[in-house]
Length: 414
Ligand SMILES: *Cc1c(COP(=O)(O)O)cnc(C)c1O
Ligand SMILES: [Zn+2]
Image (cartoon, rainbow, N blue to C red; front, side):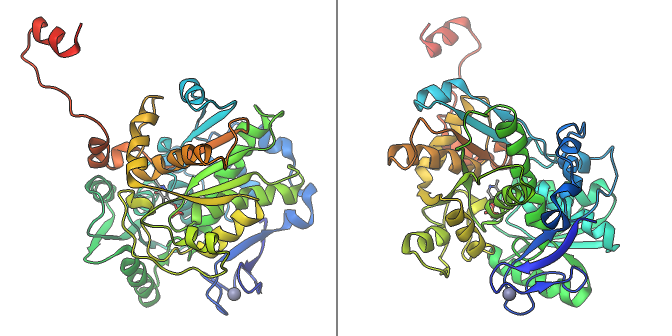
């Protein structure tokens, strides 16, 4: 078992893994997992990973905080190892030298969140806890419900009443016990913690359960393997654009690279750019102010997956960006929606939160924060099928015609 100890990302206290389940008991900070391979890098052979034929996050089992629970022929073993594209037309239209897009809609429940839910379910199997509860704006819950269903366990999901219908449909279809909370995500979050305390259920909440970030780090490991290892030996100065709500995805990607650094498999961290919606910019505000505390906002954005009043992993995500030499920026809802058909033109169908990362790259290029000569990777975190209404707002409606060739020619001007 490679897990060695937990360490609080805020007060630095260390804990034995058997001693704590969620946040730091001393200060409430989020816990970082530390591994035996940090002391002893020879424990894991790089070839064991690079030569693995496992096309999922479980190829990284020697680096993960919970063991591979098996269930090889289920969606649990289809999480991760998502494709990385090099969209030529987009690259040229941005005047860039190198551009990659990692397509997380290819996960079993069609978002990045499957990575976290897979690790949480692995931990639940290891600790033999039958019921898992999660509060979610939609995707984390859908991912948890999908992972639980794929191994025949029970999930209880609390989502805000305002969650997009497609996400609620997913939850219900996966057979989770779903409650729509007449309130915000933040209220659902607090309620789920109360329920897990009272009822003994395992709580998956983002920025509370230390295994979510450990699942999400697999995206960093994949970017290393798919881009830095294989394609960009000449371009180690990669910048990664990540959409940010709670900050847990960004912290996860950063953790993957921190582990690689500890193993001596990379020499420097890639630069991380956190992209927030203008209407949900609590971490950006702290970054801009040079602050070390995060003030909640009244979040309002079309990108529901990054609409967060109080980011649950905000401080860690702030520090990870600083450590990487990166920065935070914001994009407007108009820019987010405009990025949906732009990514569509490269064959990708994304939800608004995923489009935000690409809109962030555009903004960074426009503001001179990112040079077109520097390689960039955009993390597209979720499928457009998750939020059809947003996609329809981003495009012109199709004309309706009489079923004749004349009308077809007239409508297409041919
Ligand atoms: C959750 C989510 C995000 C943001 O992740 P955080 O960990 O909250 O910062 C971005 N995009 C999609 C599609 C998501 O589901
Ligand atoms: Zn602490």
